[in-house]
Image (cartoon, rainbow, N blue to C red; front, side, top):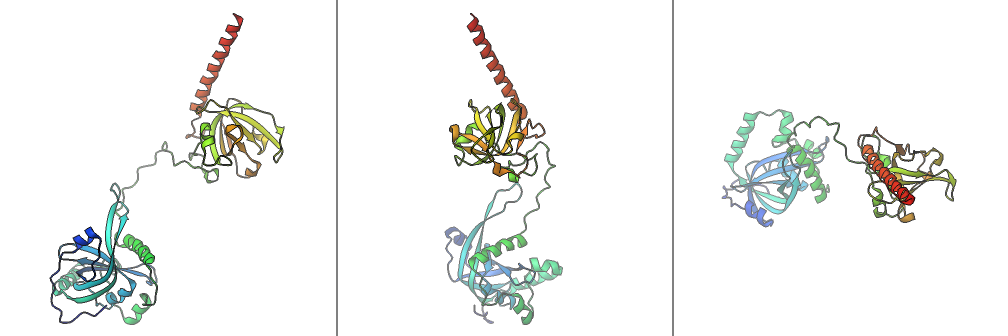
Length: 359
């Protein structure tokens, strides 16, 4: 950075921003007019700051972020509104901005400037800017966010702005820009959301450990999908099914060496899936023909795809629900109606076989 020349003449700007954005090639030595300056403190201590310049080429403007090594020239007013600057080392960046309510995402282009020198000053632009500041008479709170920062005594500025020895990498610059954008360009206030509709469900929860409100839907797996889960064994899932049969408690080779088995079914498959319960088998007592919601059961390769509830799941709360009518998101009525139709069909088939045997 070189100080501005006191006898520098006015410059004729060349329109270069349009080509810069089109080619994405930052030409060293490009000359711009500084049309606005914004300084934002990112922390209460003001140690980290972001300085944005609005650079014009006589036709268009583009925003630019100053690298921290260049900040001191803004604070010492070597760079002010109205300065002609020659940008020696800079990069063109592009990012997707958060959309406003009802609007699509937009691409924002900006420069990151690492080296710049002043060439002179446009007195008319500086005078108009100063007059506008006086006319607006911003409050101290607003001036820090919308107008250039006034010079401070060297002793105060030295404690507030990072020195030349401070590291501020590109990643830091990107992070600083994120905060700067939020502060300098706040998003439009979205309209208030409509009143919550009781019938509108929340996003389904996959794991029972994250299921804190029973009225929040669980992600359910159909019995047909059990063999196709990401892992063929020990993948946790939740199912809603009909209990087709239920055994007595019997001995087994796994702790606690007692189990109860069941056959369950749902509309997705004609197969009745095997379920083995090792967790408190005496307490697993759903009625045959009832709809049962099973949470956190693990798949297994046995019988081409089966389910197990292990004793190691103890202490995780209630895991099975018989005819859970109280859960509005659970289609108990639908699966029970389907099972009633299936039972009627089986009964008719049995009746036909009996009649045929008597003939």
